[in-house]
Amino acid sequence: MIAWNGRQPGVGVRRRLLAGAAIVGLGAGMGLVGCAADPTVGYAFAPTRDDSVASVAVPIFDNATFYPGVETRLTAAIVAEIQRTTDWAVVDERRAETILTGVVRSVDQRPLSYGRITGLVEEVGLSVTVDFDWDDPATGRSLVSRRSFTASTTFVPARPSGESVERGLIDATERLAREIVRQLRTSW
Image (cartoon, rainbow, N blue to C red; front, side, top):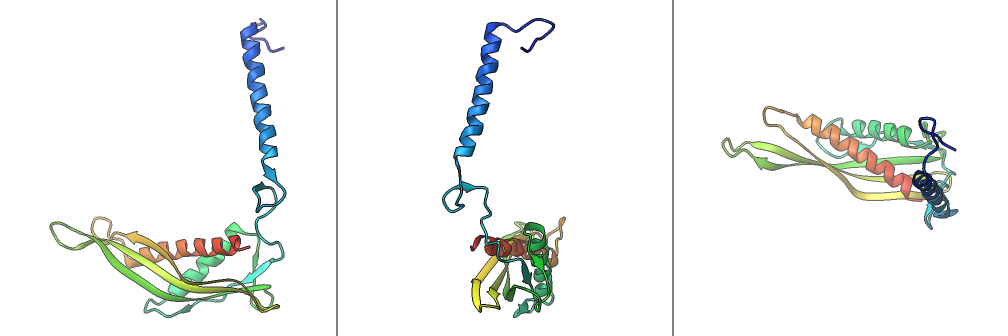
């Protein structure tokens, strides 16, 4: 029995302690009942992706835009995201079980707001669009294929922030990398 200040708790306190313990036990039991063996049916302890893929190659994407370096930035961000969020090994093409290839199709900027006094652009929207394919070279099977896959961001070129287009490209490629890897992980 639990005692405070050397005295045993009263009947009301004991009832509240027992009720609290019962609620906690009931909640834990309900949590186990809600789990399913098949991840497509409900909550499950099993992984939601195919464990047959252990490695992926990510050659540098092609660049069909006038923005030099956006393809290497995006490829590096994808590799970092795969390493951060999956257990897949990123290896060279000769040793890879799967290959992720892609093309940066466009980088678009559009003004979102103008200064009332100066008329200068205060906020810019930037979007990067890619096509990508994730293939199994051993079988020739396409695991994931997306066209016109886009990620967008905003940046503020106006003072006092004075962010550059480079800042917008960094943010957009990192967002795009997260979304591409999410597509790879959830496509199963």
